[in-house]
Structure formats: structure tokens, C-alpha cells
Image (tube, rainbow, N blue to C red; front, side, top):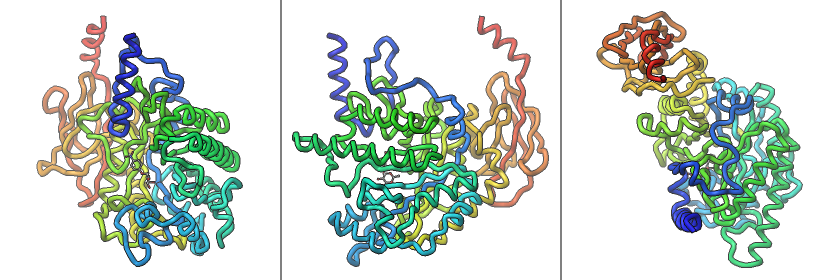
Amino acid sequence: MNRIFKATILLLLLTSGVAVAQDRPKVLPADQEIPLKYGAERLGKRQDADMKKFRDNRLGAFIHWGLYAIPGGEWNGKVYNGAAEWLKSWAKVPADEWLALMDQWNPEKFDAKAWAKMAKQMGVKYVKITTKHHEGFCLWPSKYSPYTVAQTPYKKDLLGEMVKAYNDEGIDVHFYFSVMDWSHPDYRYSIKTKEDEEAMARFFEFTDNQLKELATRYPTVKDFWFDGTWDASIYKNGWWTAHVEKMLKELIPGVTINSRLRADDYGKRHFDSNGHLMGDYESGYERRLPDPVKDLKVTRWDWEACMTVPENQWGYHKDWSLSYVKTPLEVLERIVHAVSMGGNMVVNFGPQADGDFRPEEKELAKFIGKWMDKYGECIYGCDYAGWDKQAWGYYTRKGDDVYMVVFNAPYSKKLTVKVPKGTKVVKATVLNGNEVDVVETTRNEYNVSMPSRDPGEPFVIKLQIEKDSSTIDKYRDALT
Ligand code: JFZ
């Protein structure tokens, strides 16, 4: 009785607040957990080599490329401020009219090798490519859809060219895949009739086929990042999301899958009804980040944030003056912030229809690359340090090395470092520079001297730490 009551309350809560609840999981005490067939497949982080690689990569690039790059936010003479990849929806363009853009798809300047070089120079370890966005246009010659690159003047397998070029540069490839598909007559937003149910069953089969096709044609793919899974037709079919995860993991051992794909038996998304993360990493941080002081719960699971450079443009938009465009320095700070909280950051690029990148994006890639080249040691393979955040910037950590990434140099030229009990700082060195003074000011607190440095460039100080044996003894006492 009690259990049924709880399940009913849960259901009511879930159906009303699915979107809001996604990153505030309520973890129920173990003895009160409700049984789930399609909930989390595991508790805690995955610790295998593939997941470790995903995590250690830390910095990625997103590529949003599709038919929307052709109109670039403008339809019939009107420029829409909304996200360019949603233009079909803003301008209410009928599917056939939209898909006719395929006749113009011929990116003459596209050079997969040049794209891969650009990513390499930027220091990204992986690239997430939109294989198919909401519009339904496929960058690979899918045999299950008439709307693919094979039916355009370009003809060739764009996705295949990209996968090869990135892999040749040692860059991992992740596939973005939108389940919601505006080009498919069987897609339903919700299921109201028997006919809807049958259509959606066909749609699930079609989607399975496309995913199997992607997994077998491009077996080096490391990750599937699902999107367009927020409609009731999908989250009320949690079984299907669990099935897709299983299917892909059987086809590609080690593959990673984002939480956005998943819904459980009760339609709860990302985190199941018991508060456990589904999929391998949380993908709800989009164009926002956790609070570096208060949101420490995110360090309990793997997560990946993604960000646009203008406010909200993923696909190419011809007019970036319509919203605030982040400076390269601001983009860099978000990368460091994410890593300091134990997450990955993916910076978005929306290539032009001709296959080239806009100058702002080229500049950005160069800026980030130059910094990563010098200071990347504090990003790759690094994690949350577990130390109290200070106003000068962010900490990251790799084993016994703690990195201070300084964005706001204080006038005092003294950088305060507060260490947890039982930790001693024994040495401080500027990455690619000299040793700097480190003085213990009070118990568990140090001052690190500011080095001389290039003005305006965030710099990194590496701290070497040791366990403080006097407090270790006390710690041992407390344990008994
Ligand atoms: C989706 C897409 O609609 C968008 O075009 C882009 O591809 C982006 C990466 O993903 O947009 C979303 C999806 C989820 C959230 C916000 C925007 N969310 O969970 O906050």
C-alpha cells in the first residue's frame, strides 16, 4: 500500500516537473528505492578505460552543421533572432520546402583535413558532430532516409570524411543524434491514438536502423550524444531509451552515452526515479554551469557541458550582432570552470554552408589553442581538487599536483590558498615558468606570490602537495 502510494505521488511529481527536476536528483534511502526496469544501469561513475579517456579528454568541440547553415537565420527576407538551426520552426517552413535546401548543399570549401588541423591546433581532444539535427538531414548516406548528403550536389559521405580526418589527427569523434526528426512522417510528439502508436513504433524501428547503420559504418565512434528526446512520445517509452543504450553498447564496446537519451519506467529523464544518473554522464549543463561554490554534488558523477559563442546560436547564423558574443577569454574561463568542477566542456562551432568557418570562430580556436599549448597540463586528465574556491580563479587537480588557474590577480599580489586539514604545500611553480614563493600564513592557509607575467593572460601555478604527518596521526585516531 505504502509503495503504491509513493509511486502515485512520484508519478504526479514527475509528470508535472520533468524538465525542472532533471538536475536536482532526490536520492532515496536504499531501502525506500522503487524497483525499476529501465532505471540507472549502475551506481556511481564508470571506471573503465573508455570512460576514463572520455573524462581525461576534458576539452571538445561541437560541430552543428546542416541545411540551416544555408539560410543562416534568414527566411524570405526576414532575419530571426532565435537559434539558426531552429529556423524551420521559427519561420514555419513546411518540411518539403525546407528539405529542398538540399539542392543547394554543396560546400565547396569543405576540407576535412583542414577542419581536423584546426581542431588539433585548438587543443580539443574530441569533436561532437551533428550527424542529424531536428530537421532530419543526414550528413551520411543513410539508406533509411531520402534526405541525406548523397542526394545533394555534394554527393559524398561528409561524415565519413570527417571521422577519418579527425581520427587521423588523434581526435575522438562523438556523434550528436536528434531523435526528434521533422522530416519523418511517422514522428509523433505524443501518442493519442492507436494510429499514433503504430506510427511511433515504425519510427522507433527507423531510428534503431539509423543508429545501427552509424555504429557499423563508423566503428571508431566513441560516444553518442542524444538530443530531441523531450517529447512525451519518447519519455513515456523509457524502455526504448534503455534498449537503444544497450544496443549501442553491444555494437561498440566501451561507447559512452549521454543522460539526455534516457527516461525510466515513469518517464523521469536524466536521473531515474531513485535519483540515480542514467547513461554514462550528465548532459543537462547547456549554456550554463554549476555554481563553483554551492553545486558540489556534480562532482559525484561525470558530466559534460556545452556552450555557444553567441548567446544561443548552434548552427551558422549570418548576424552575430544580435546577441552578446563571448570573448575568447570568457570561453576559456568557462572551460577552466567546468574542469575545476570535474566536468568536460564542449565549445560549439557552426560552420558556414560553403564549408569554411567564420573568422570569429577561427580566431577563437587559435586563442584557445595558444593557451592550451602552454597550460593544457591543468586541463587534460584533471579533475575537481576538493579545495575551497578562491576569488582569484579556479583549482584543478591531477594526483598530488594541484593547479591554480588565475583569472583575477589580486592587487596585493598574494594569492590565498586554503588547504584541507592534513595537506601541506611544499612547492609552487608557474607552468612554463619559475618557482614562486609560498608562505604558510596561518594553519591550513598559504600565500603564493604572484609571478611576473604577460598582462591579460590567465596563468597557472602548479602546487606540489604532501600529506602533513602530524595531522595524519590525528586523522587515524579519529577513525578508531
Ligand atoms: C538542443 C537543440 O535543440 C539545439 O538546437 C542544440 O542542438 C543543442 C545542443 O541541443 O537544445 C537544447 C536541448 C536541451 C536543453 C537546452 C537546449 N536543456 O536541457 O537545457
